Length: 169
Image (cartoon, rainbow, N blue to C red; front, side, top):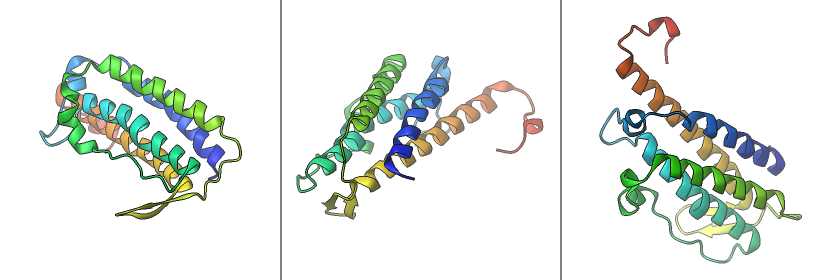
């Protein structure tokens, strides 16, 4: 896929996330099938932070000047340090969706970006702007799958019905 196709998919995922995250109950928002797993609220907070502080920042920085050190991130640590469980779900969803729109706007206004620009990551090795863009989309897909799984497991836990007729998950 080329950069335009990836950006179009990021834009399409904006609609996907909007649909997946609307009309969630408080119980659904905080449901954890396992104490070590994230709930929908934590996922949304993570998406909002990653949109701005990771993917958008690092991708654009690599395009502009790949020699500049990337800012540090701590996705696992942010759960506690940014108090994800104390955040308002609707506010964080709105923040994430707005930041995604901002990201798309920035990506669409780039003039002749050199997607081969490469940052030398101290642990991962060479990371091109193209690789960041592709991983941004994959990150979406991973969390879309996670949101589906959480909603499915929540529904299974509260429905009280035999759900085998629907098919295997």
